[in-house]
Amino acid sequence: MRLDQFGYDMTVSSPIAAEAWDKMVLAFLAHAATTPEYLGKALGEEPDFAMAHATKGLFLLMLGRRELNATAQEAHVTAEAIAGRYALTAREMGYIRALGAWLNGRPSETVREMEAVLTRWPEDALAMKISHATRFILGDRTGMRASVEALLPAYDAQNPARGYLFGCHAFCLEETGEYARAETAGRLGLSLSPDDAWGLHAVAHVFDMTANARAGLNWLEGREHAWAHCNNFRYHVWWHKALMHLDQGEIDAVFRLYDTEVRSDHTDDFRDISNGTSLLMRLELEGHDVGDRWEELADISERRTEDACLIFADLHYLMALIGDNRDTAIRQMMARLHRDAKHSNSGDLMARMANPGLSAATGLEAFGEGDYKTAFLNLGRARRSMQLAGGSHAQRDVFERLTIDSALRGGFLDDAETILQERTAQRAGRLDGYASSRLDLIADARSGWDEADRLPAE
Image 1 (cartoon, helix red, strand yellow):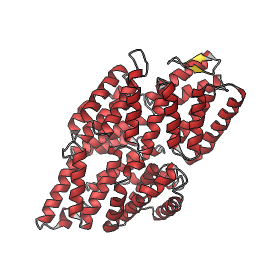
Image 2 (tube, helix red, strand yellow):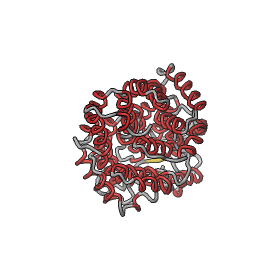
Image 3 (tube, helix red, strand yellow):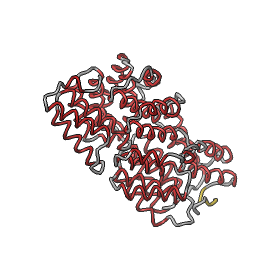
Image 4 (tube, one colour):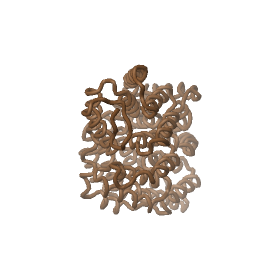
């Protein structure tokens, strides 16, 4: 047995493996690109490190890639075999059960296993972050907040993960509408952990949700060091900056960031695809020609039509296919979603394929075909449960915009206005550029203006 940096027992003999593990945990909290290197070193030094094998499997499943499921399953088999040879701690066994639960299609049980760990070992910051990330994928914002807030008293000034916990708290507060407290918590977390990209980005979310893009740009300006070390999460922070420029009408800056940061590397991680597709869709909704930028996203998405790992990923793959008019791939993906929806009782993720997935996908397909009535009816149906698709308010806002624009183009002005009012209320009652322009369109249409001449180009 050795103690980790939080003072908890680990079934590890190698001091090098134990040190690498501690570094891996802090790297994971910081979304650092070095996370897999430290995990690999820990396993290389200690092949029988069961908790590290289980963590590897969980990390792979979070990537939402079907081809990685087999490797995650192998990690679980290995961890269980090690557990049969050694007397592991209850904490380590919790990690193994957490991986098994996800492999069985029940990430909600993964959360319960992590929460059971945290009940006895509250300073296990890796369990905290895994619970946080899994709840995020499942769209459980209230659970995220409750989990983090239960841990706050346990993290004193000596805890090396304290700043990261504050960053997670900031994000939870923002997602539950506590914007002032979220900003305070995010700033505090960053002061304790200068590489806390998650906390920095939580504050960026606050500025998005309070329609204060200029303040958001000022917040990010000069703090690039806080996300330069990141894995693909750095693309997401640049995406936030591009959104702020879009709200300010600074379109040249949006395209520049898209080309040089957001999609500078043509990665195929679903989170990177979601950054690209949602940004291009926002640009097109505002009537801007995005050139051939859909093509590379659609090329990647066409290879992902059968993934069926996360509905959040699937919807963005579908968006890319629609953006580039890949009709055959769209039909294939829609057929698969219809099949998945019939198995909604086979696990947490399949349930989300059925609701909100199928309605949202049908709405996206109809929007791409110019059938705005069908698009609105389906996107509107999905809208009340879109939280279950995971992601943040900012990420899901592209679906909100598509719902509103479908209503406008389909002649459902009252519905569009109601959704705009609800969207504005969620943003501390403040209008952003998108809401202002759409309310103007509604006013013009009601004043007898020629609606077709005023709506953004299709």
